[in-house]
Length: 256
Ligand code: FPP
Image: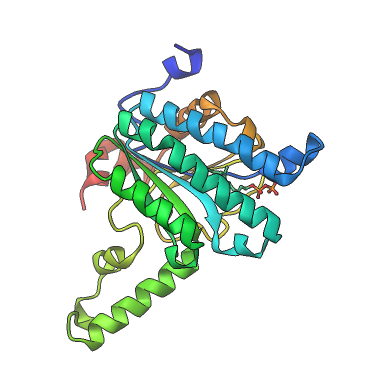
């Protein structure tokens, strides 16, 4: 077992880790290759990090695989990324099932090319019985899209009398988000030295700890994940309260 992993406190693990996998393009360029070469190597990091989460029994992992804005990239890159995603998912379904990992997709599935949608829907169905871990892929996702969608659906339900305006609270809004089934992330990791959230889980990250590393995504491995978790464990999560409240009544933090 690695030194870093040994130092992790297994009683204080994040329950949900979200990752902005950044730097594939730059990694490839630095090596004199085209951007797709970086994305191909990024898949190896996805496998390795998923394995790391499974080793630590972290039940939720969300990966920002393709944003709404990514559609504006050159056509070759978009087509290549779609093929890579579909190909990877097709190949990995067996491994996902072997490790009881349930696949989820958040994002505007309607904008995906039909072949990608079909393949994803099959993988969602084939892994739907898994209960131990959850791999959530944000695909054609952006928070502004998600929030707009939630507002529209709430408005429709109010209009149809299924919901009354007075009863709309945070729990209601939560139910209309693409992430309604999942707890909020505790830890957000962004690779490759950018300090931005980039339209990712804006509502859900309200109390997440943010971790930024200069490591490019294709170089990011379990050891880097363990470092991020150790850093997370050194933070004092106050959820808007005072230090004294946390020291004396830490259990209050988890009561709603
Ligand atoms: C960001 O790097 C990366 C992406 C937009 C795509 C990430 C996708 C993968 C790693 C494939 C994932 C596969 C599965 C199955 C989840 P960038 O292109 O923005 O890099 P740059 O900032 O250096 O240009």
